[in-house]
Image 1 (spheres, one colour):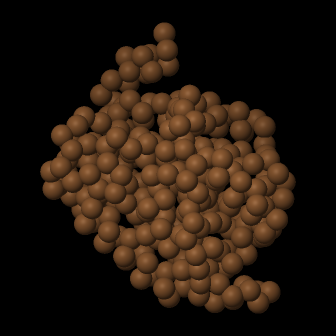
Image 2: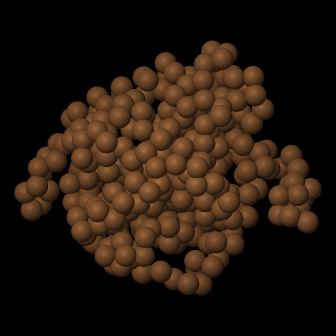
Length: 298
């Protein structure tokens, strides 16, 4: 018997309740109506790869942390994020805002998605400064926007491949990057990667610009002990961190000085795969409402 059929028999309606609870605890109460207006596909639509990938909370959690590690490895992005973000002081709020933005731009109706992009763009206009060694940065710098967009796409897609659907086709992986290009440009990216091969080449080319830093360790320490899911969630967070480090190319792990723990990684792979596939049985409230808006079942 396959995992999915066994889990469906054991979990039944419990998987649906779990998915709804994850939505509410991770993203907080929804401030928009994902079910209206009828027939509005938003920026991606129900046939997109993004609607499949972003529906899974484990893929978002693991991929999101991996993305931030890559971002914090770049000195200008690191300074911009850490000096202009509430993450160090209020990590839960910062996590929820980032997750909410992902859900709105993925599943929200067009007007709401455009409004959120405009809001983030206005905020980024005020994010500028210089790194400790004097490199100027601005959040709207197209090169930095390209990197931030790429790290998110790389993280989400590869976490989905690792923990949800290892057999996702090469064509669908390319389509995922191509679908996100327009959204990346809306956020300020000048030349977003449009295929898995281009994404890999960009990450390889960027590697020499990445560097280890205590802020990366501080970030991982915060993530390992902070969860919107309460005590049970906090028990999972070290596994999420371990899985996120493992998701990075080995050469970048080495460059950033990130140490792996084999026993914890084995536990992470087993536990997070089980949770990811259980969540796959019953998408959360937000994807279900978006599919219903389009007259589809999730």
